[in-house]
Image (cartoon, rainbow, N blue to C red):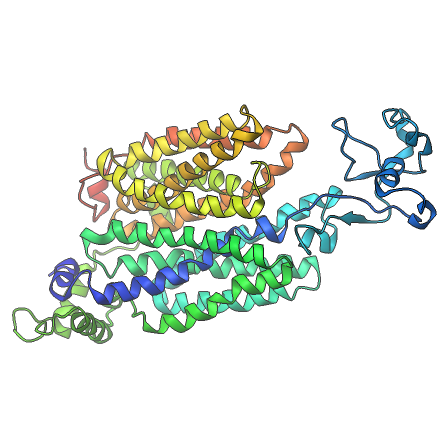
Length: 525
């Protein structure tokens, strides 16, 4: 008997599975509130150099003080990072006569003055992470995603060794602790370290939650389960916008987005360990207890009555033996055979491109002509219909076409963003965000079908590693605007097109049975 046959007897999608999914969906909302927190945590309000001896200019208005103290850019705005070494009083007579002598222009010497109308405080204003220190501001997001990258390798291995539920609980507990420590940070170094550790911890929730839910449902409901849990990422997106709008001080914002982890920890006690994992590890008594609980909650009370329909510990032990396919496998096994090697290389490129483009757009909320809070909320809203559309498309036109064209369409929308007027940028950005989220939703479903059962967890871990690498690099690309203002967008477009084209090289998995062993992948199609 296969585990799928067993699920049919005890109920593959009943009240038991609905309870599990409800709790896992609740936990899922914690992820985007930290993964996209950089938009608000490290937001940089408008600023200019602090002007010394302001009391000497009591007879001048604020604009006049800025005019004689801060050089103007070609567009007429005041510089954020430069000041005059001496007041230029002649500019009061004719402001268009900007000094040609560049020697009197210097970098800020006395700190900065920030506009607090939108943010009470951020880490940028707390530690002056602007101008020459701007790179440290963007690096905060990179440190977080480096932690997520490390956590993908750590929790992927630990969840196979010690169980899904235990590692999920550890992930949430560590996320709560390190999130609160981040809120209490007294220095930039402390914040960088604690945010990195928060990324490590949250990676466990990102990796384990979805597979745990899918391991308890039958084949017919796996795609639905994946889409449903993914939708609650979008709900978390919208909750982040609400939290950031209500809490404008970065310490308390970190507390606000971290506190829900406590509720998830409490609710997780009602989620059972994966019966598949327990059987594979030979822990058949625990698996049997959870299976009986599932049968009772799903109304299959006669599950253990008839000898033919019952599954005792001996039968589960035989099932565990049947699942042992022999041999040991590792990440190296993904590249030993030609077809699997091609799949691994191409899927790795696709995952990198999906994450790189998604976070590149999601972490740039200021260039679309909308409020940063409204942009975050709209970006969350647009993801939901995008995911529902993919539920239909992946079953109509196939996984490969869906994956490739969502990335290419994202690139085209982002390219249009460079050409259209400011009034249309928000519309183009929302459409691009929908395409990027559709690509992310598809890649999770597609990859799980490409790899054979004996290597599926390794394959997901490997591709997740490359995705987090893309997420870590995405914020740093914003620094390229110092070379050319449009270079970041051009970079995101180029990577999305390349990864979309690479997706065409992958095999189609629509209506194809899941491969069990390497030979199922390597055989001629």
